[in-house]
Length: 81
Image (cartoon, one colour):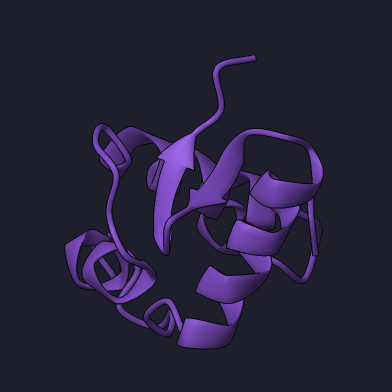
């Protein structure tokens, strides 16, 4: 689930979703505001389902675990390191 596989398209892998989150995290923002900013529409393939909230939260968890983001005063921010 972290990396794309035969059964998981690359745009649903947690690393890809995490990269999209980091691109949109240019300033401190709440989780709900970030969720509204992230494009969730399916890509070129119409058969793929849009990004679900649980996948979004798992990607946030992964970014927090690797030290890419922090939670400060209720806002998500990119880590300095």
